[in-house]
Length: 391
Image (cartoon, rainbow, N blue to C red; front, side, top):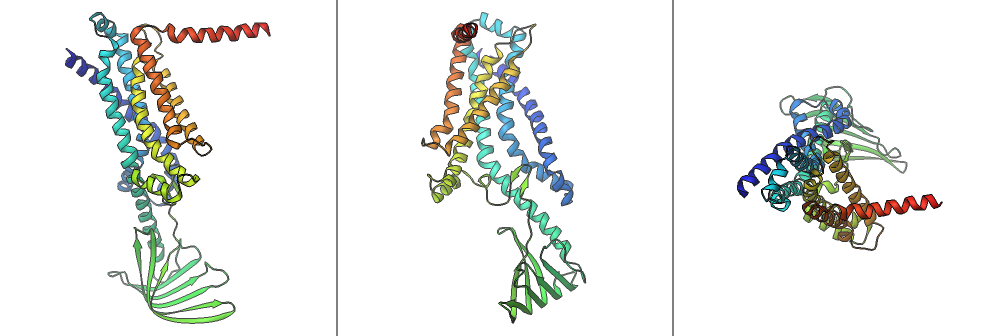
């Protein structure tokens, strides 16, 4: 009997979970898509690169959609069973709420592990891959703007390049002229017999490799001429600083795994503002994973509040708890930089509070003693009304 019951409850949860996950990711991606549509047209992103872009953005969406989908799945499953009087039949057969929890616990653990894997592995990998993708697109666009015979370069800012001829097979240049005006007070002019363009993904730079030429520059009113056999010039290309509302201008916390976050925290000092920010990110990933488990369990007693023939308040109530949880976590993040308490205590406080609240609500629901929660609220409301009358 328990195995059949557990399988039945698990099947009831999984269907709305995947459905909710698809719908929520679609909604969240629509919001992100409006932020990246300008980049798509600017870099002429093709279908294959667009699919990669969506794949790299997906982990950031899953971090928020997975806990919400797991909560909604539990609420929808048990609300349906409650409205069809299946919960009443199970209670009549001697099956209490506690005996219905094991499949929810297993599901909550799996959803929590999914959130943990997404936040600690997929988001850093997606962040780095996103940078590489856009650097490649910027490199291609820059290369197309540079390698044109007998035309001045485009998209290189204050560095102007002219190439006389380009070998179509080897991509080697002949007759290279460069005017470097990045230092307005000391302009540089470079003439080279040969040159080529190379990209370095590991360093996120593009460089011009020149050979057999000379460089002319003015330094403190003195003109200098330098002859060289080999000379390298780094191009001032600028990949997008933000993609879909996320910063990609430098090595951010999204690029780092858990071990690297702790290393950076030690590097900057765990008592400094910079070091605390890395500690906050380290604990935030763990906290959100635990929160996914807590919110999944909380969905069970919330669903029990629905009744056949009455308005289903389970889903709005579950969304309310979800929003309240994330607001609390956000407040905890903000407090870490201004409090003398350790970061882990502040960051784990929302999980402790919501975990305790979940246990209390499950106990009250299982024992059908809602007056334990409603009585204090009624007393508080009556005292407030009494004070208003006296005023």
